[in-house]
Length: 422
Image (cartoon, rainbow, N blue to C red; front, side, top):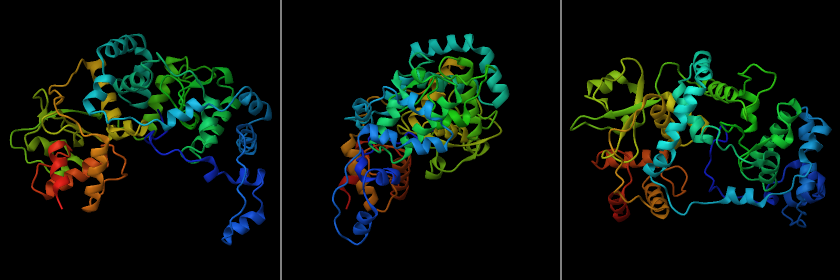
C-alpha cells in the first residue's frame, strides 16, 4: 500500500476531541476567551464535538485551497456517512504474533504463483516497457501486484471518500487521513475517476497496487497513453505507476532485491553483518555463496537478513529491499514481494526450510522482552509486542555482548535467559 508507511494497525485510536484542527475549534465554539482561560490554567467548559456532517463541511476551506470546486466537493460527499466498520478495522489488534513462515506461506502460495505467471504472460509488454522505462525488475512489480490485490483480483470495495472521512473524523493517526482525504478530492477534481468508482481498502488505498491518494497524485502515470491515470482497471497504468513509485524512491537498476545464501560452517557472524552494507565480494571472501552454491555477484553490496535464526533461510539483501519497504514498511512484506516475484519469474523457491517446529514468542512475551532489553540500555524501538527490525537489532547487540551468535532471533531460550537476568 504505497505511502501509508504501514504504521501498525494496533496504534491506539485517538479521540477526535483531543486534537481537533484549528478550523474546527473556530467553527464549533471554543472561543478565544476559552482558549485564554485554558492557557491561564482555568478549566473551560467542554467543547461540543462536531457531528460527522459538520466535520466534513468544515473541510471545505482546505479542499478549496487545493483547487477543488464546490461541485466536486459536494458530489464527493453526497450520500457519505460515518462508517464505524472502517474505524473498527483501524482499531483491530491481532491476538497473536504471526511467525515469519506463516506470513510468507500465506503470501507466496502455489495458486498465487500460477496466477502471477498468467499475468506475466498476458502483461509481458507492459512489464517489459516498465522495466525499460523505469529500470525496476519486473519480478518485483509482479510481487507487489500479487501481494497487494492478488493481481487485481480484489482491490477493495470501500467508498474511498467515506473511509478516509471516517478515519479523519476520529483523528486516527493525527492529520494523515484528513490530508489523504483532501488528496482524494483533488483526484476527483482532476477527473481521472468518478466518485462512485473510487473504491479501495478500508484505509483508502486504491487500485490494483493500492496507492494512497497522495501517492497517486505524485506517482501515478497514464502508462497506457490515454488521457487518464487509471490504476483501477488498467493493468498497464497499475504496472507503470508502481514502477515509477519504486524508481522515484531510489530503485537501483540491475541490482537484485536480495537472494538466499549459504553460510559456510563456523561462519564468524558479526552483528554488523545485519546492520551495515558490505560489498558482495567481502561476503564471498568469507565463504558465502548463493543458496544453490553459485558465486555471489561481483558488483553490489548487501547485508544479512536473518529472521528465524541460523536454522532457517538466510538472505543477503540490498538497498532495493529497502525501496520495497518504502511501499509497505514491513520486512515480512518486502521479503514476500521478493520471494513471490522470484517464484513467478524464475521458478525459484527456498533451499532451506523455515524452522516451523519452533514455538514463536507471544505478543506478551515479546513486549516483556522489549521492556527488559530497554532497561538494559538497548534501543528496542516502540514497546508494542511485535518482533520488528528494532527488536532484532537490540537482540543482536545483546547476543554479541554476551558471547552468543548475533543472529537477532528472539526464541524461547533467549527469552528465558533475558527474563532470568538481573
